[in-house]
Length: 218
Length: 183
Image 1 (cartoon, rainbow over the protein chains, first blue to last red):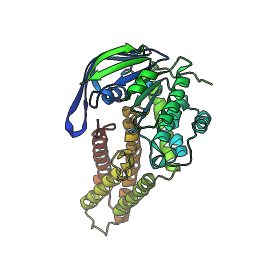
Image 2 (cartoon, chains in turn green, orange; image 1 turned 180 degrees about the vertical axis):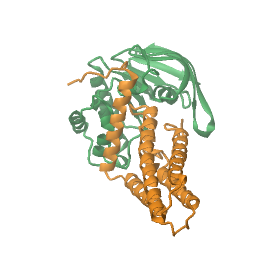
Image 3 (cartoon, chains in turn purple, brown; image 1 turned 30 degrees about the vertical axis):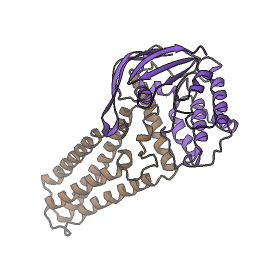
Image 4 (cartoon, helix red, strand yellow; image 1 turned 120 degrees about the vertical axis):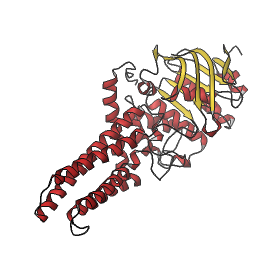
């Protein structure tokens, strides 16, 4: 589903300068959950932004379903759900206002299905996004991704700082997502317990390099 | 129920048309939700357009020198066009609590930044034609009032329309639509 072929690139990081990814290669198949691990500054978020950012400059290729994502980046993004704290939504607007504004960018968007999911995840829909708890906001983003039938979920530290009850709930949702076998999840985490129990593959990053990518045998 | 997935390999032109349609719907929805910036944008647009026409219609206000009037019109027109396009150009004052302005929020949405730029160019073009026509009508009317027609009657509106369009195009081209502080 997602293939990185010798991706080396730079991404600007504010005034601090640039962050460099060095020769990243891996293959994430459909129906699997891959955990990305590494200390702060290892390049996990940069990896996500390289995939998501249309203007990211890199050498090598990133293939999605056999096609280079640079060829039609926006069509590629219509099949991607990005779940993170800094995911851009209208934080001052309500869930309904957000989905009315942003849902229409997705050809496969199903509003009713999204609201069913929100009900099932027990996330209130009348609140503004800035009033939601972090867990609710993460669930909202997953429901939004499922609402437009994303096939690739990119999750940046989605479980960080969350209690064990939320994490059990969260991984149940992910397992449900993956059971049809046509979706994949790439998620960064710092939690060893998350990795051991839930991931199919584990990728380890350090200083902009992927130092290992292997099947989880725990 | 799973819907048919989008065709990642679809032609660039059809994708562009599709995206322009989405963007138009997005703008419409923002207006529907009474977004303050967009309401202000409309207001400023009409205000400056009104001033521009008024400037041309009052020959006694700035004397009979059409160059003075034209300069006034040029300044008003340029400001009007830039300010009315403000929310579309990422220079809006109102920020979300993420620190993002409206179009930066679309950076991870399935719409190309090129499409947003193209759509804004089209918008600028439409506004510019309207301003240009406004200049011309006002200039003609002003000439009728004074009973004197010169080449400048037609050349000034044309010249100013081109200059304002150039300012707008330069401005839009210089925007980095997806740039964020972090990236």
